[in-house]
Amino acid sequence: MIKRRQRLTIGSVAFVALAVVPAWAQLRTQHIPGVVGLKAGTAPPPHVYVIAPLFYMYWTDTVRDRNGDRLPLDASITTVAYAGGVNVVTTKKILGGNYGFQVLAPVGVNNRIQGTEIQANPGPGISDSAVVPISLGWNFKRADAITSYTLFIPTGRYEDGADDNTGYGMWGHEVAFGTTVYLNAAKQYHAAAIASFDFQSKKKDSETQVGNQMNLEGGIGADFLKGGLTTGIAYYGGWKLTDDHIEGFPDILIRGRNKVFGLGPEVQLALASRNTVYGFLKVNYQWEIFARTTTQGSELTVLATFLVPPLRVPTP
Image (tube, rainbow, N blue to C red; front, side):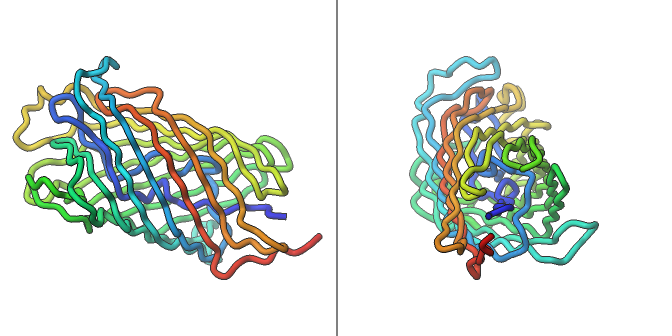
């Protein structure tokens, strides 16, 4: 029986940010919303997990103002990104929780949307990377908990004012706290939430600085097939806590702090054969049902992780 499935701290680890037109919207952080999903507050058991790959697609044709009205703009654009990495969870205890760390590096991104410009086709290139130097996970009788710190590193191509940037030219910091609550003694049914907070440096060679943001992600779901299949509804939300500062644009042009909320189905399947677990495949699709001062679209995430070495599950 697969009693505890792995869950990556991808909610704290992201490499593409999305934002829109300067007169109507604000910048966003490097955090990708919606990747975490079900069991967001549960850390995986001690092991080595290889991420290969994380595929992310976001598309939109709509920009909303602070009142929710659609703006008469041509905002049709699709962002596609790929990443790989490794997540290591150890048996070492800190404050009673298992210590882990993670590295996620973008393999490629096809375009970038930024608050001061929409670069629909800058050409392929590497975007920004992320490192989680510390992640702690706890397991209790009817709940799990997790906390982590993420450092976003500006490894992508970036020059102030350039029209072919694939990175964001800034350092980012994120702290996250989450929990998964089990709704019955067998832990089949669960509800989860993880809150993260993002803080950014000024952009390279510029006074432009992204405001601080809060993200809330999670889901409500259930496990089937002895824990080999998990499905349910995942959600994400993002709220800007402080104003952006965009060099060269008066503050009056930034009309409201951007907010967004997305919702949709998620499925995760254990890749197993003959009592051996090789990895997990997770797919979710979420529609943004609420947006203010930002784009409104939908996103698809496909995440494959593999255990090194594969895990042998004892037969009953």
